[in-house]
Image (tube, rainbow, N blue to C red):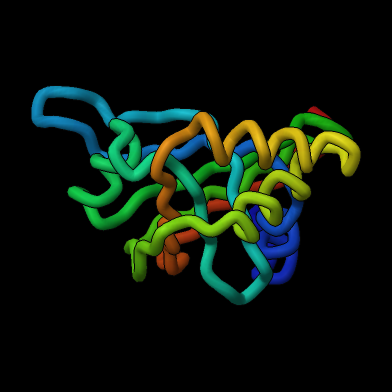
Length: 141
């Protein structure tokens, strides 16, 4: 069964690991990689990645990407969203802290932020405006 608008937005707002897909070079399949993301129902979705990483370069070139999240318990459920990148900005430490706090235990956030700030290089935040949604709850098959 497809999810309602409210169900799919709430599911996407939960801290799942996303599978980001973006068009790659001609003759190659789309690049698909796991990524942390942030989403508030009704708003834009954003991801943070290295501005000069392969993922960052491909997002900038394509101007859009897809993100799919899923779970297998208590039911098999997924949400996939695709749309244009509506803005790109230099990542801030506050955004890094926000996304780290979404995925890591509270006592690990400061250490991760310190590590990532020093080791990950120049980061960018890519904001996606959800344009196309696919979702389903297959129940407990």
